[in-house]
Amino acid sequence: MKTKIILDTDPGIDDAMAILFAEANPNVDLVALTTVFGNADIETSTRNALYLKQRFGMNCDVAKGVSKPLLRDPVGASTAVHGENGFGDIALDAPTIAADPRPAHQYIIDTVKAAPKEITLVAVGPLTNLAMAITQAPEIGDLVKEVVIMGGAFGTHDHTGNVTPFAEANVHDDPHAADIVFTADWPVTVIGLDVTHETFFSTDYIDTLRDTCGEVGEFMWDISRFYLDFYKSRMDVDGCFVHDPSAIAYVIDPSLFTLRKGPIRVVCDGPAEGLTIQKHKPTKHKTDEWAEKRPQQVAIAVNDQAVLDVYLDSMTQYGNRES
Ligand code: RIB
Ligand code: CA
Image 1 (cartoon, protein in one colour):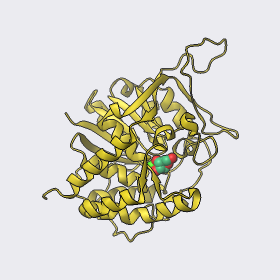
Image 2 (cartoon, rainbow, N blue to C red):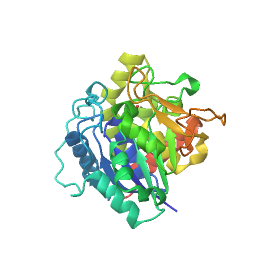
Image 3 (cartoon, rainbow, N blue to C red):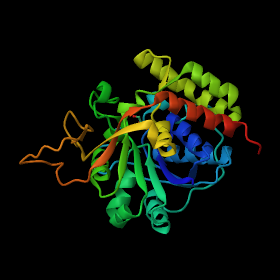
Image 4 (cartoon, helix red, strand yellow):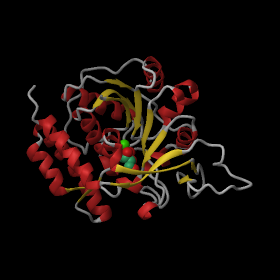
């Protein structure tokens, strides 16, 4: 049976790779893209979601989300990583289709309530829309199937941060929202840097996508030029880590990941702002800000070759389908 997902996203180059993966894989039913600020401002990320929907003939809804974090001052769009237009500054035609009239958090609430236990929320940007949805309608906690988050870094394999030494971008963009989402009474699985920095799209791999996956592969190759330049200049690597598509890989096949259970909190200010901490030991403490919180799942290992294989298989079949 297909897993129905709402994909909350800030497209974004790796977001586009995740969106197209969700659209391509036959075991995923992409119900909607809900947009959020992050890699780009909210107007740009929503335009990019609509662009993908129109260009690739996707059936999903698009609902526009929030433009800024709940409490902290905005960090600003990640133009150094994703370009001014979020898609590596390639030329883009303006989409001629419109978003759903509801704000993203309302779309999430309505859709989860209309299909109890059927919808998996997958978030690959700052967690502001999800925090607003669960705060305004706590009853959806019992109605979602699962909440899958690309975000955070828990120190496995020494992966501790990408925008600060101890924070991952999506959590750092809105740490208060992340703390709400991780501590809410719903089932969360976190696909953080612990595993996304263990899976790598080499330049050769992306060349293969271009050569074997038709128009969709060429598009991913085009938008990733800017992204790969950033990786080369910042980290001296030939390729990029696999962030947002890893969350979709988990939805498709959870057995590719090793999970650890325990409540999660987020540091919301100071030099470690955005640090994510999971208490996975049963030790009792007199003072414990984790103790009463719901245990959630954090991915700490991944079968990286299997993720690469399922991605390439999905995109090859999708790119060569008969329309
Ligand atoms: O830290 C990686 C995450 O930050 C990804 O979701 C990427 O798209 C950026 O938003
Ligand atoms: Ca993202």
